[in-house]
Image (cartoon, rainbow, N blue to C red; front, side, top):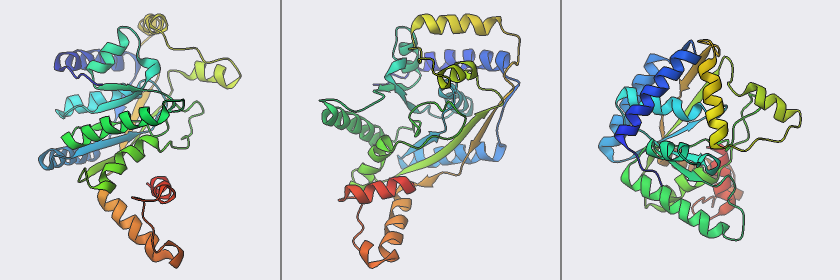
Length: 270
């Protein structure tokens, strides 16, 4: 579970500012998009609803970017769904203090149903409290630079309590994060050429940190962030269900709340 700490969030924001200043020329946003996100978060807070951020995923830096944005906008930092490969000594505690909660990369295995139920209950609890959320629909980082086919498991766990009525609504905000040059490019090229992926460890993190500090400034160009207009998940579901039911007689009974196949159609559209 996440264990957000204002002190750690402030410290991480300072470290992130130092890192961005040293490694990148700048972080480029559209001012009106930031203003719209700020207004949406204020509205969601008044209504007791969550804002669910769905960023693209090309680098480990993605974890830091939106946290940094929320910190400097004075907004409640989102709880971030992170792979359990990052739950390592020191780093795991730091990430958890900044909103991360760790989940398996795969929900398979003999306890898959129980594990899925626990994660779903945890996410529903966050939605009931109106906590902001962030997770990467692609699951893992894209090695090619292209968007990966989304994995709809966590998105389904967001939609399920809205379908059942246990959560009134949540706002969905797609986010595009892309880089002039991705920090992990060399690693990605090696993996695409057949090199086995190196497992994350505290030692590898320390080695990477030492390497980054030795680099000249602004080596990786700019980070570009584009934030799409947020929309109501409940309204989207209602409109999609009505559209499906009106499309043909075969879909007159389209009901993602009771049919797994219908819910899969809904999630793929979403």
